[in-house]
Length: 289
Image (cartoon, rainbow, N blue to C red; front, side):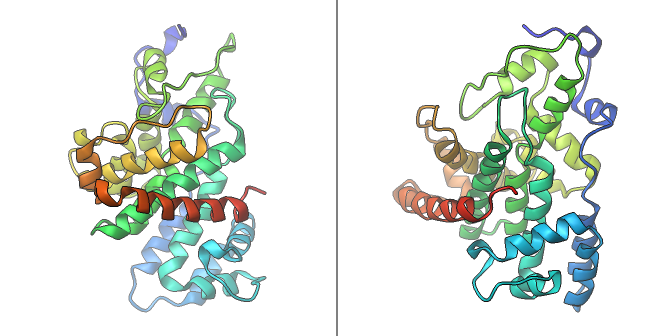
């Protein structure tokens, strides 16, 4: 059993405020959201905002050259990248690039390499956005929640790295649907789902994204945004199937999760096949680097 007497009464909110070396808030996303809400936003202005962060703009250009975001002649500048995806695609493209900086890092506490963490995020995002497209859920919110669903692992890993004496045992996953939550709750009293939601809320992400991430392990408990929560919970099943080969094939999500996420058992296999194709292409072209 883990011991941390000084943190017995911690909350997810106090944890994210206590840690000083978490990734910085992705302010560029909030700026873009405000800009894209305007009916006559100019792509040039969007490009200027992204270009203010050189590391991010380089990632945006690289990712815009993937088939995941369209086809065409190679782009070399941020303006060309944004013109390729247009106003409707720029938020997804930039969110993708931002997420790679936030969650694409090794997590020693969990024994996960950076590429593994990123692949899990990509798989979940693609599955979640695909489910949102089938119904009336907000596709951008589903995509963002999928990319950020594992952010709490980063939070807990940061906290664990500061403990003395250092912990020598890796967090163990129980597999889908609870993943690492049982051992996290034994140690801290809450899971990576609550920790990730607390950080997203602190950063000012939408209520829908925060709620879905918080309730990804038990979506029926979501007080609002229930469909988005069901979508994320179901998308995590596909993530586990694609990205956690050492686990047995995870048990299918509950029937009511699938129904509320917008997928019927009769066409589940076809949906999964299409998601797997998209994920395979994305993994080949959007590796960390």
